Amino acid sequence: MEDEFHIADSESSVTTGRPAPAGEEPSSTKRSEPQRVQVVERAFDLLNALVALGGSGSAGQLKAETGLAGPTVHRILHTLISRGLVHQLPDRSYALGANLVPLGEAATRQMGGLAVPQMQSLVGELGESVNMAAMESEMVVYIAQVPSPQSMRMFTEVGRRAPMHSTAVGKAMLCTMDPSRVREVVASTGMPARTAKTLTRPESLLEQLPVIAQQGYALDDEEQELGVRCLAVPVPQGPTRMALSVSGPTARVDDAFVRHAVPLMKRIAAEIGRKFSRG
Image (spheres, rainbow, N blue to C red):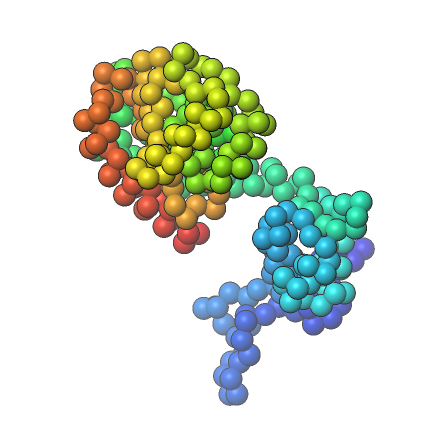
């Protein structure tokens, strides 16, 4: 049976992106420049176009966004639909498919492992536990942790999910969103109180977020657990919204600790972001 990704024309050709100059060995035989499959590139162009369009779009919009011919768009979409990566809506437009979700979640959690060397460096400088979290389905999910060497330390299980409104990592990500988007998030998850200090009204959270954005870090001051303070900074240039946090007992994570830690955290977060942007 013919492979679904095979297109019997020039669109399925293997390309290296440029023709070989006269008298030069064809680039497809060179080891220094890896070969690329054009139809796969175009499939990803269509997926990225759907993301750029907000998750869904018509065939005409996808054609305009990618510059691909109409028949090419329809053929590739047909294959993506068969794999659950795209689905067609009742109005005949196209949307990102459910089978992309586990791919995204797995990729996000793998990204946490890439940040561990920088996180270990931060633990060495500050002596407290360091976590990395990402936004996933309107919640934060912890994707990496390096624990403190101290006997009394904070531990957050990798894979644990928590509401955004009551965590430092969540607020560090929320402060990068428009207020309308913040309201959507908290309307979806609610704002349950974990302690007497947890913010439970959208208005209180929205008042705090501009301050967080201006100072460049968020604080969970016993809002998740009494006796525990956590501070977090956003990770720039990440593939999705991410934040880096340091947590410990309130007796150790005091105001002086915060003043010392924040510049270090911002530097490490920037290093992690650059690593992510390089792929």
